Length: 139
Image (cartoon, rainbow, N blue to C red; front, side):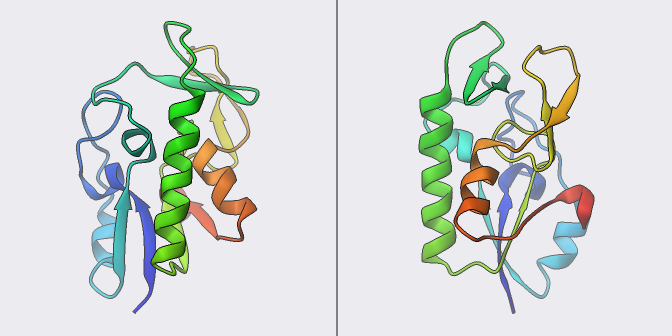
């Protein structure tokens, strides 16, 4: 039985910026034979739900109103990393395209739906600490 860190929104928790979720049935199946540990780095960092959407702009994360929420994203990423380490997780399955959890592709910071190559803040930190990260699209 593996321990897997997962984005809470993929497990059906209403924690996305809009206050909804994006439940992934493939995770439900994985949960039958593995321990799934849900995290929402944005909530862990102190952001409310619902909240203004954020996108990465270089090393910063900006909300759609232009406010800088980098500190909250970084704090949440550190909490998620701590949870991964404390639980000796073997894998991480995080939400695609997210400014926190996206891997390989994220929104470009213009709030226009355009995507660019990049990683979310939490994914970047987990990868830099040796964790394997995939998105729900890679299951």
